Length: 115
Image 1 (spheres, rainbow, N blue to C red):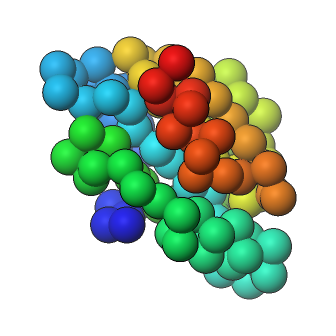
Image 2 (tube, rainbow, N blue to C red):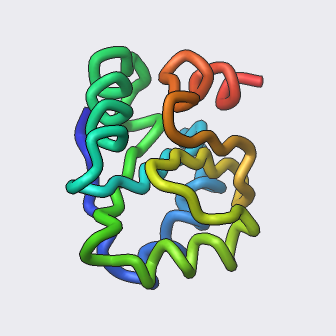
């Protein structure tokens, strides 16, 4: 996986627009805490199982310890309560799927994107 760093609130508007772009199936956001073993486990499981194309499904990684304000903005923009770790799938400007902790699964994300 080629994680793009999510480091500014302005990127959320770009991600919203990107999710509506022809040729992009969806955008994936992962909220990750570098100090949490559950978060590290979820990240590793996701990376080991990921099979989607980077050009069709861009992936963004949010470092929650350094950018908690962005997580708060994600909560308000997409109306999804904050959890950590947490994955969100953004398609056509809306969050179509969210999961946290051990429920983060590459196959579930792929199913949500393709439904």
